[in-house]
Length: 71
Image (cartoon, rainbow, N blue to C red; front, side):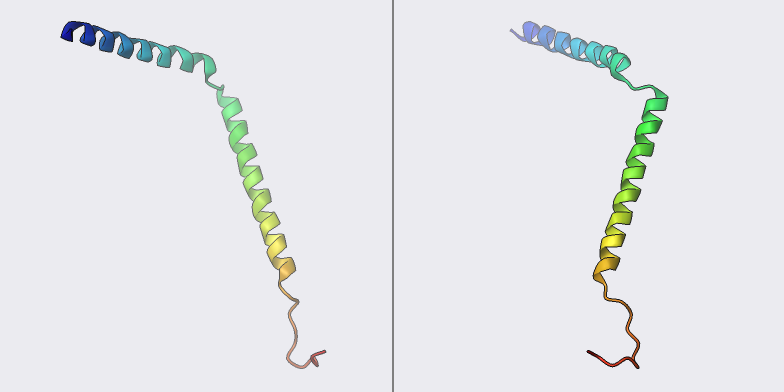
């Protein structure tokens, strides 16, 4: 019983290693695609930050001078 358990464990480990190494070669993105994906994510991050900044500044009332009468 112990021998069959070790054989099953060894076969499962070997199969998982083989599938890990063979599938990564097929599904990995080329270096250019990865760089483009990083640029796109950075662009989205910058656009979201700018949108948040615009929303925050539109909520702040304009600067009032102390000499201006209050309505």
